[in-house]
Amino acid sequence: MIIVTVCVGSSCHLKGSERIVERLQQLIKERKLEDEIVLSGSFCCGKCNRTGVTIRVDDDEFIGITPEGFDAFFEQNIMSRMQ
Ligand code: FES
Image (cartoon, rainbow, N blue to C red):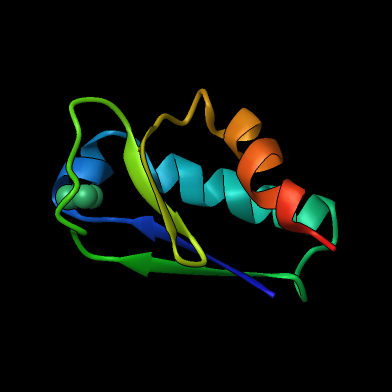
């Protein structure tokens, strides 16, 4: 089980966290990963960045993820953890 936490604080919200959450939900549905990935939200994680959104995958934190770059991020940092 992988826990993906998307920051929905005001800075990340402005940089597209809502779109990222929607896309993630879509990918989970399309690939039937409902039992593998838990999606959660968090308030500001104190890592506001000039571009992009802060996302935590289990205990690893990534900053600056844009909605445009999210599909690549998903493959590299989430799908790669699947057993
Ligand atoms: S609002 Fe997301 S890290 Fe601050």
